[in-house]
Image: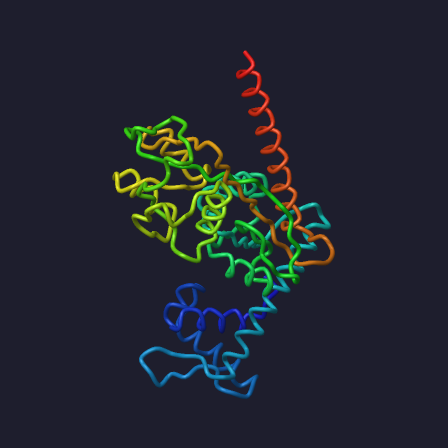
Amino acid sequence: MLENFRLKVFRAVAEQRNFRRAAEQLYLSQPAVTQQIKALEESVGAPLFDRTGREITLTPAGEILLRQAKQSGLILDKALEEIAALRGELIGPLRVAASTTIAQYVLPSILGQFVRLHPAVHAELESANTEAVVTAVLDGSAALGLIEGPAHRRELQMEPWLRDELVLVVPQNHEWAASTISSDQLRGVRLLMRERGSGTRETIERALEKAEIDPKSILCAMELNSTEAILACIEAGLGIGFVSRSAIRRQLALNTLAMVAVDGLDIHRTFTLLTLPGPEPQGSTAALLNHLREYRQQDEAAKSTRQRARKGASRS
């Protein structure tokens, strides 16, 4: 809203790499866009686009201006957000970066509830690996991040958020479905695993070693790069696998997959909330942080209630 109009036009052309598409995005005529870019180039004293090829590209001057224009846009958005907060309002964009499992299975309902409470906030969710989430928080492109474990970066403030359980999942018609097996029975099974280097795979292998099961004694039937791919392969009968309990709600409801308890094997990890160090954030970022913390409290209370109920049932 506060951004210089010529910079707004420049950013649209730079993002679209096309004057016509930028004009359509801005609801302007193409000659009007061309005129604004020409006036901006005269102001900075250098060409901003190379128009010699089939697709326009940024010149070195254009690259510099785009980088600084993006930063100024973030600063202006932040200023408007904090001014609105003085009036008790929450407005503007709010970008969150999260690891895949969190982004796909945990955050959508939580963010949906938050946006219903604050409809003037435009929330964006980026799903990425841990390294990319850390980078997004550090460079300011994401207001906060959520990852499946520690970030190992001193530049960030880390806060434990939710405790996640990884469970063994089999097809509904499998002989182990909804039963308890010994850890020894895992030796020699066809296990579907995440790719090497995956944090989920590392967590599973550490848990197996702690239970005195050599991961090499388990046959890795297939390596897959997503939880969704693992679930689809389990449903197809290609093997069994460990996935986050949060990821199988739909399959359990549809009765296509079942969980299996493994004696002596407890696989948990902590979802971690990332923010930049310093004063507590303001505006919509602060409101979302409070929303996430309240959700954590509710989740912990619900788990505690379930544990007490199970203990009471076992005594009876």
